[in-house]
Image (tube, rainbow, N blue to C red; front, side, top):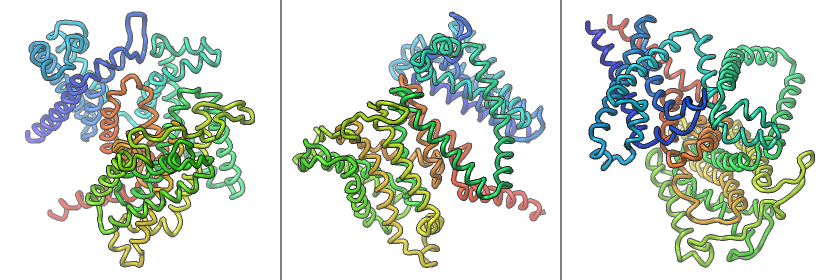
Length: 576
């Protein structure tokens, strides 16, 4: 009896969480805003919209999570059904309250409109809509639980298929115009209709995603076995072949594949990759929580502007590539000055102080006292392009201009920054940083000069971050203090944490997810921070090591979990 009560309480609590999430998404307006964005178009009058998907995600997620509680398959299916049912009850209760008190509620929650109530209730009477919603949420929770209890060989293809459908649908603003530019209107019309996937395209995407999910793990294992059995010369040849394929793809990407708009998005992603690589040295390698990293970004931008712009107070008018070493060195010195006062601080105290330094830097660039040199609120304009003419010609590509003209130099700088960070990570300095991150007192006791290595982390992290600032200044051809707000530091830290602290490939993945993917929903920019927060919460709960974590950190994390599980299971036997 006690176990049954605990079972009901647990799943009712999960359902309550799912219902509250659904009500929150509706109350802030995200559901209604997404109600016009089609995912799959079945006919001229019938389509699955992103708003419906947003309402369906909470019961699906809660049902899937409820089924992971253990026990037999009937118990786990019942848990998913119950959690989905409670989610639907909370949704229905919120719908009925909103419909009964609509004028009063709208005085406080202005997003709750008659249009939203009609959408959530499927255009029916609110009572009927609430009952229908409970039934649908119950079925979704049961379906999610059924997916969870299946074997991994079945579960992975289903999840992979749905992910493929979602990604291809969200990519419509990029893919369809590009297909039309490439004189492939028939392909565009086959894939998309009314800004959503056609049924045939959705089925094809699902099958492709499921096939990739099925083949990925065994194919990867087979490739690893063959690579391990090959001699060093063959392994080196394969690695070079893959590198050439990647280089060729990136070389053709801006002009031949992506187009101007997506190339602009890739430039923004590249800037955050550089920032993430620099912050990863400070946070991921050395374990120093820096919330004022935007200061180095700003210093790199302003130093570039001062040295290259003829309109600056210096009026030197250097070439970008001549000024770049001076910018890197100058920002490294700034990193030393910022790092010196915080050598004795750790954890939260270090984060607060570096946060203050970031705000101080922004206010200094904004101040009237430094306006004769830095331009104040008017900033510095007239910065030349990263390539002086702004247009150049590449073999097999032709003339390059616009965002693509920035993409290629930025790609080279990202590759150089990643290689530099990789060499640092596996060098003596990287091992010292790793020891400091794990336990600073023990590292110092074993002979690591923590003072010098902390200063080195700040200086090198600042240097790589300054590269992003330098490219940013030339890309916009101007710099203004308003570009260097706290959100840049927070976003960069989120990129590092989401990708996996200490992981260099993780920085690239984190930047693509947090910076690139939101551009697919650019028309819903007001909800960008909400999406950021939701993604971070989900990833940190389900995969705390990050999307592409460092091997060592992933092993450490899972070894700690396994040790805790062993201790937990051993405790009852010892007690008996």
